[in-house]
Length: 335
Image 1 (cartoon, rainbow, N blue to C red):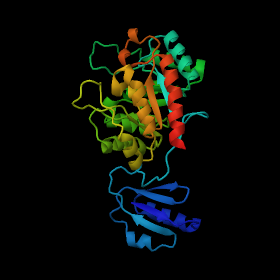
Image 2 (cartoon, rainbow, N blue to C red):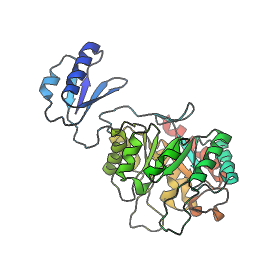
Image 3 (tube, rainbow, N blue to C red):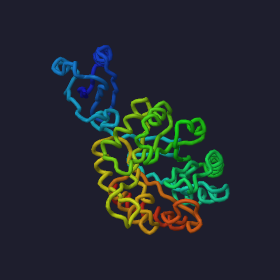
Image 4 (cartoon, rainbow, N blue to C red):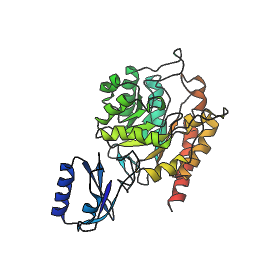
């Protein structure tokens, strides 16, 4: 249920209303927008008398929300959420965030060289896998804690915030220097992990599952937000379809749909969607034109010898040219 308040609401009346609602057994989330203030009621609202609330002087309208996700729902939070990673990085709110780096951290020389290159080209965050969930148990699984240490070195070297994937709750204590925790597609419905991330105050990059619906993605975000962490980014990384030419199928429609349903920033992963480096450029352009808040792109200085996902990684010079092109597209649609 949402309660839409009139402009210039009397604070004492508002405080009394919030106190009464909380005493009725529901949580109240206040969203102050440019033109409206909305109270979002979380919990069992069946016993709340809509007519009684509607008659209050400070209330403009009262509506029941049918969708099961509440915190992530745009009806509860009409304005776009802007996530601050540090003083210089803001995700959402009209910004285009470029997250770039290798699929896997392989060495200090590799990660620091790539970090330097992508920063020069305009990337504002560094991605890199320390823990790698792989389909085959014989594939490279990442450097694990050593990978986290090397990411921290690259961060010290360049100042770029770190984005890296967590696979299990037991790894959380080692993510102290990580700026954005990524939840991979395979873990999107690992609800115990999502609950644990809800107790942190770090931004979470939540990837859509291979065969998940929009509502299922938003319900996973709800798990994190229900725990008190509202710093969630939704990531469309391609879904599994009958097409086998590409690794996955990029659902560009997810961008406007998720923005209609939710206030959370939407990030696109063209690398995993395509599985082919030649497709990263056009898919990135399409995503920005469709209104994405950011991109997470795999960049490697030697894709042919990468330990993981070399075929979908682009070289630093290709990323540089792409970043310039994306800036033009972003400028065009922002006018």
